[in-house]
Image (cartoon, rainbow, N blue to C red):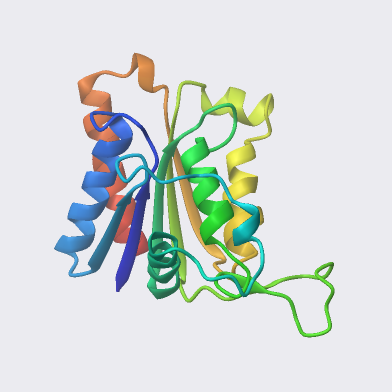
Length: 195
């Protein structure tokens, strides 16, 4: 399988990057081809421009490469922190710019864009790994777990990927090295179960 792994955290020494490394290593151990994208290290511009809005536009080579990686992926792994109940700007901008019409989804002919989109991604499975400094109970009871809705319903389901697993590792700020080691092993097992 071709697995696209995207990490969105500005600090290369973060636990997010440790998770992404374990994911990449485990995918390779399983014999998969991995495309690794570190949005911050690449200096990915999250701002969708007016020039990118038309479907027929010619994209710059970097953006086109990101689109190609998404289209070619058999599986997708996203790793990012929960910041204010959403992905960091780099990840949100990656969604805005790369999950394009006619790349990730389309509307049926004659549909003015108000109907239900048809997913175009060939990926059959997505794995989203989040970190947080909010307890799972509070995230669910107080905030209704917005990342669950964003990834499962708003992004992947719309684009044709119905098999989505999301796991949050929290609370990172108070975690010990032993706890983080256990989380890394859990991430490894999630990769094995997913791909």
